[in-house]
Image (cartoon, rainbow, N blue to C red; front, side):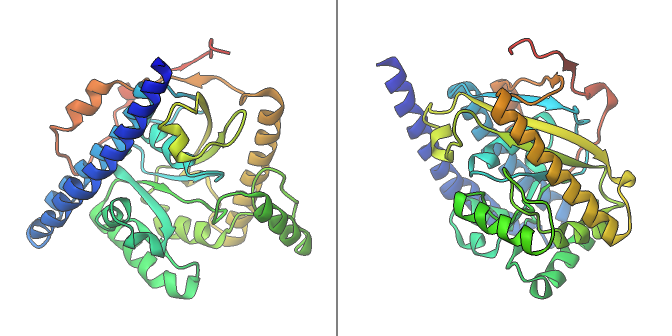
Length: 327
């Protein structure tokens, strides 16, 4: 009975959070337009606060209210880096896992996403993303390129902090899409993936070309679920007990500059993701040490009273790496 009550509470809280997003935060974002002609920094600070407010709330709800154990392994990112994040994509629950990572990286308000163009018409998160310099793409490089290059130039010129997420697979992995990916790989002489789809590399190459000097690092992120891949709704209704996130950090300056070499580099990362997910399916965990950084509700409440347009990293804030004693 107690668990049922908590499940209902989680669902109701999720509904109210979306209402808060649509009727309050979207209104605040719209009102912030009056600031734009006078101070883009102030405009960004307001919208950064809005993003931190809702995305931070969802992290608190997931990890504290609903008790999801989000386990991080691999390289501990330095807080407040400008990062390009390359995850695998199995479910909308991946979005929540990435928000939990961004919280630890002190970048929850700086998340930016490559998303389908149609998303900008969705009330709540779609409308909100319009104010956050997210990149809406039609999957047609000829049409997408001018807008993307303008945004990249803006990021560089205004030194906009970012935690830029790019799902290079282009869509969620499903059995049907997996078969199509294998057929595509065979036709082009590529390695046939088992747990991921074939990455679309053109956007990655363009991003590294356009933002290399603005980025500190590239985060290669692999997300695993056991025993089954959940939905986003399940994350807010006590059906998800654990999410595993494996992170590898590559300094942006260490990546090759040649487009062909970048293409090969990112394909290699997805082959490694495939191997990691194969091991995860067998062992129920990812290898390597865990890095700490628990979510505390008071941090979210404190952030609600602070406006900031940018952050500077401090070496003293580095996440602590420790053996994972929970396994």
